[in-house]
Length: 151
Image (cartoon, one colour):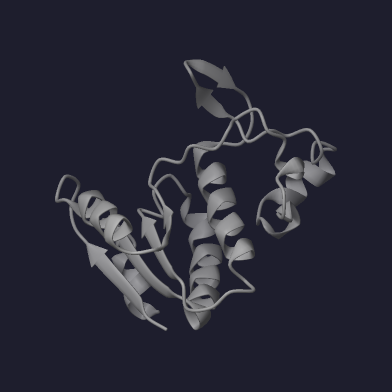
């Protein structure tokens, strides 16, 4: 399968390009800014195993694994929970898990590394390599192009 990477600076039309890809192709699209409901406990997300998240063991150790919420802001109201980068990793891992039994999908990723600390980039690269064995991936970014070139 293929991994197509589009690199460009902010404001160069990368998201517009992915929106057009999404409109004209049946694909799974992870947007740069997600819209998960912040009040949902991560452990209650259907068909999702949070133990595969690289940071989840911290919540298990602290005894918060069953209560930690997705977190974020919805309708102007803030809900404490995961950080923005952790939410992005959660959404990325959710897509990885839910597409495991499928093949030859088109997966579009808009700035998948934005807001994610460099510590978690190797985890994402590993998962991207697993995804590209079964699916075609189109990814837009303005950073980590060296990492992607090595893939």
